Length: 222
Image (tube, rainbow, N blue to C red):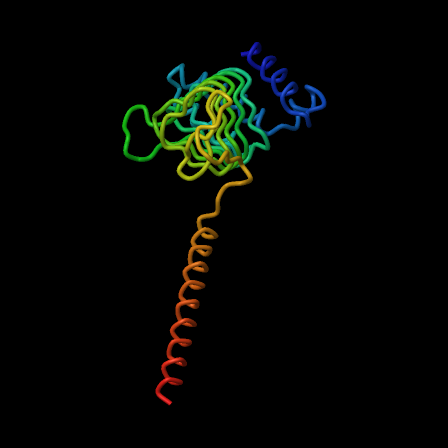
């Protein structure tokens, strides 16, 4: 456990540019507190003291705003940045040196039994507010953009964006025509409004042409 704590501190300090010292992380980082609280709860869970494990995890949730089920399996060096609103389900698995931002959910869809939650490989980044739902694998070094909803397996070394999530880069190469990122994601409402505007302009043009034809007919009748 102490080796894991030292590794967690070192990993967070190297990856978080706002971290100025290990003491600051130890005392002030709620994400670090949540992970260490999980490790204690997980120890109780493995010792079949499940009530104590759940009680400890709920106390940790109360103080940190991060809910991690004590049965989840988490590797070393997990960075939960900003530590708020993160939920990690019972059968979730997380590899080494992963990063989860605020509002991330590693949850289930409600239709699976047994293994219900996702498995994250090593060095996976999940952006703020992203939801990864279901018993599938997210490969090593994958990145999931903020706000994405991922419902199927993600290959290693890829980037996923959108709702539902789709792979836009793989091994550093684009796999779709438009390379999307966490900022420039198409707005479906704006797209529909644009289609309506084009359709309205076409109808107005047809109406104007019809009016002109009627005026010409009137002139001929006169």
